[in-house]
Length: 135
Length: 173
Image 1: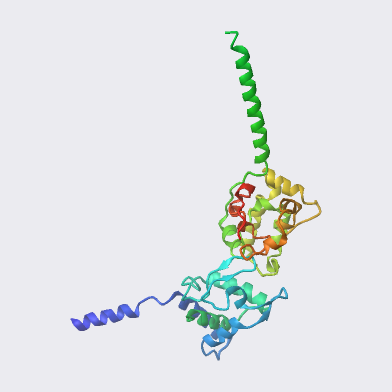
Image 2: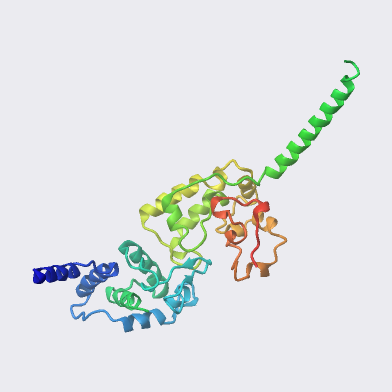
């Protein structure tokens, strides 16, 4: 009986819902494998470099993710029109990366603005991996 | 009875003149002070307040909104593009409640202040705005609590609801 109880607990633990950002990561992983058969996983270190990289926006302004989102992603950021942006780090803002449509909308806009092209699934996954585990 | 008549006449004259004066003064004060009509559209609300305060459609004429919505991929230096369905819905909403489709006094004056061959993208570039903020030095907009002249709600707390009357202005430090 005790064994049965223990194994039930185990099952419950196994079925515990994964963090919502994991859903998004899985979708980007599927895409990344299609884009690159040699895909070998997402890297928070690459995501960190991507976040911190200094870029030139399409407007000509020196910029980068950190510019509006704050150099410390656990802090709130601010748009150029003075609107507060909730933190990017999931630890500080659990709603981050729970909505694929919203996430895609902002990747579409900001990648075009800051890199001049669409981001790859690899870049998106690295970015989320970094921010999902940032403390 | 006859003794009372002049008093009554005098009192009623004073009363009606006072009422008349009060009404006309009030009327003048209220012209342009009334808030814009309440409007709502969920797509407009969520999409147009992500990066900046929510601007009421009655602030600019329809041709301005159309031009703004046609250039969202270069929206004041940033990419704010939308999918086609949302862009069309929001454009319809903005143009149908635009300043030149409004009957309120403030919108009428805004429209009158814009030359017919001009299509401003910023409300703060209209002569109406400039004339109504001529006592505000540029350095005031640069305060950290304000940022720029486009941040109406920093001083006009009810701006997002279309409330701009001077009596509710609170300039932050």
